[in-house]
Image (cartoon, rainbow, N blue to C red; front, side):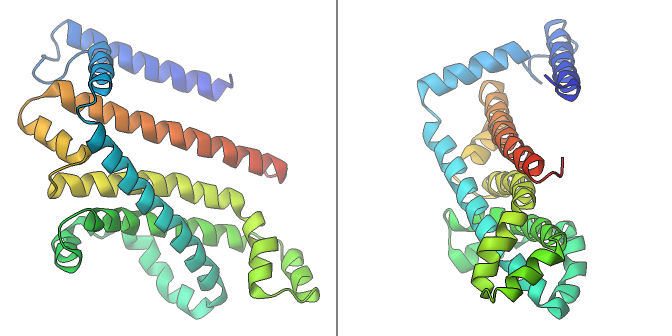
Length: 250
């Protein structure tokens, strides 16, 4: 295990141990939070009972759909924007300040446009995730060695062939960097939208449990979200590092 991983594991272990001590000694009362070991027990009990499996599957499915749409749309948009320099220069200030825009404020408008259901939630997750992909992919395209693009022109490759044979393989690590950010933003968007106005999903269940002081449901669901996002990001990060090493960038 690398030193960074050891320090990270030690820090998280110390944080969990501190919470455990504070909860068991009563410094954090049971009404506020149960001990971490009890949260794990409640999560296992909840998953084995299967009472919230449909809500979990709904949220994860919508999040991955928003994530997939953001990856495809963001990568394609970045490839186009790189060729349209004037359009990119015009949009760069928007990309820089995009996350200052309160996207959730558009939720009532999205309900009017798409109706009640999963579509507004997916669209919010998509809106939050797509710009992270565009910015990351553009950063990767800017770092492609010019000699590779010149070689593609010499061999008279079409735009599609250049993208498939040169651009996309070169920017693969940057696409994965964007994917890690997009996944987090997609989860935030979908779960946040379920908080605001939904009758199902993990966000709704967390909100309902919070309003009813149901810590045995709220904290296990939060832990499940954290574990899922961390696990997937670790896989993407490992893949990204392998690509970087293969290209001599790490």
